[in-house]
Image (cartoon, rainbow, N blue to C red; front, top):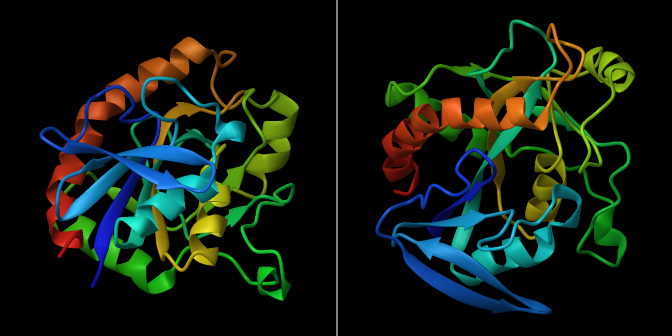
Length: 235
C-alpha cells in the first residue's frame, strides 16, 4: 500500500501543521509543489505556502500529481465550509457523501476517459469514518451534500436560498479536487469543517472576519481529531 495524503485548507493554514515534518519540493509539469513529509503520510496545503492562492486559482492537477509522485495512493481532504442550516453551525464536522458542482468543467483527461462518474470513494470514505469514530475524535456527521461555488467571493443570500434547498454545506474547493483526484486514480474522502453559517442563514450578514474567527475557533479541535486518526489511516 502507498502513503496517505492529507490535503488541508483554511482550517490549518498558517499553523505549521504537522510539526516536525520535512518540507519537500516536488517537480511536476509546469510548476513546483511544496509538501510537508511526515514519513508515513504527507500534508499538502491547497492554498500554498508563503503566498495564498485563491480557491478558483488552485492548480489541483499539479497538487495531486505531486502527491502521486510521492507514492500517495489515497487522499483525505479537509475543507472549510459554510453551514446551510442553523443546526449545522460553527464547529460542526461533516463527511459528505455527494457533491454538486454544476459549473465545474475541470479534468486532467483529454480523451473519452473524461466521461466518468465522479464522487467520494465509498470504501475509503467508510474507512475514514470508522477510524474517526474509533479514535473518539470530534463528533462527525456521516453523510451530506457539499455544493461547490465558483469563488473567490462569498455567495449572495439569494444564492444561498437556492443552494440550501439541495445541499448541506457550501465551499469553493472540494468537488474540483475530488474530480481530479479520481481521474488520477487516488481515492478521495473529505472532512468538512463548518467555520460559519452561510450568508443569509445566520442572524447578520456574513463577513470575512466572521469566517476567519470561526476557523480559528475550530482549529484546535480539528488538529486534535487529525492527530487521533492520521496514524491509523496511514497504516
